[in-house]
Length: 76
Image 1 (cartoon, rainbow, N blue to C red):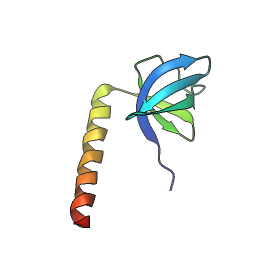
Image 2: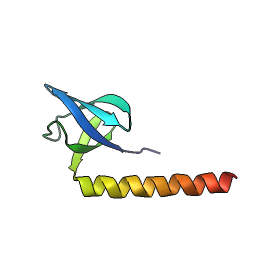
Image 3: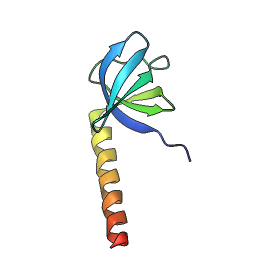
Image 4: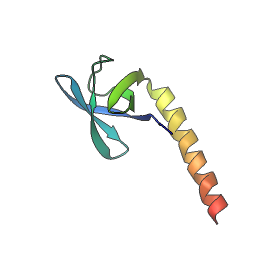
């Protein structure tokens, strides 16, 4: 299964951005989307696919947290 991940652009160097994924920082190609520092982005296979707004990021984070809690409860 392939999953895209979301994060925040920390810095940009030519065609590469440093993206923070909840504390993990990874380089991602910017060729498909024009981004700037502070943008929230969706990344798959090392490429930024799209920009996201803060509201979308907060909703996704909330859903993922709820899912993690449900999985923990099933494991107990």
